[in-house]
Length: 257
Image (cartoon, rainbow, N blue to C red; front, side, top):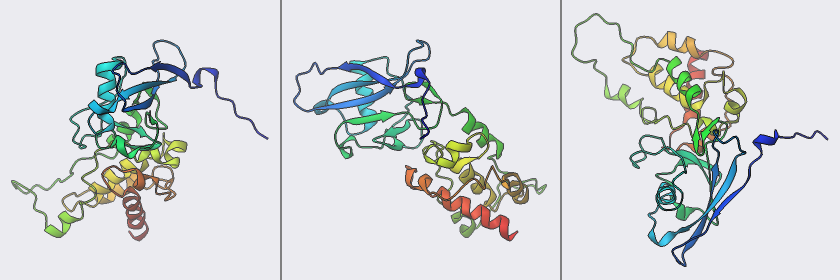
C-alpha cells in the first residue's frame, strides 16, 4: 500500500482554546484555521467559545465578534456584508460560500471555518487569488466593439440582453473554482469555472465583435476541456449561477462553428 506523508511543516496542529468570559449559557464552539507565515510555525486550529445571545445571524458576524472581542489577530477578508463583492468567500462546515450570507444557525454542532480549498494561504482565512485574477485578465473581460459609427450607445434587443442573465451576476468570489477537482489538479493551466463563465458572458454578448477570437482563445485542451462536468461549481455558487452550463455552451459553440 502506498503511504503519502505530508511535509512536517504542513501538518495542521491543535491550537489555542479561548474560553467564554461572559458567563453565557448559549455558547457555541467555533474552530478556525490559523496560519501566520511570519512565525514559521505550522498551521493550527484555534477554538473559540462564542456567546450566541449577542451575535447576529451570519458567519461573518461570528468572525467579527471573535476579532473585535476575543482575538484581534484573526485575519480574513470582508466588505459590505451584502453578498455582492465576494471578498468573504471561505469554507464553512465543509462547503464553500460567502460568510456574509451563510447563517450560522444552519450549521449543526461546532462551526468549522477554513480558507477556500486549493489556494495558497496568505494568512489565516485569506487565500491567494493572484492566479485566478491573471486567468480572468487573460480572457479580456471588456466589450470589444470597433465600429466606426458614431453612436452614443450600442443598442441591444431584449432577447439578446436576456442571454446575459445568469452570467453577469458572477462576483468572482472563487467559490466555484476552488470546489472544482479539475481546477485543483490543473489550476495553473485550466481556466476554471469562474473564468470560463466570465468568458462565455462576453462570447455571447451581441454587442461584442470578437466572438471568433474569444472562442479561439479558450479552445484549448487544458484551458477548457479539463472540465469533466463534475458539477461541484454549480453546487458551490453562492449566487445560484450555473458555470457548468456556461462551459457546456462554449463547447457546443466550438463544436458547431
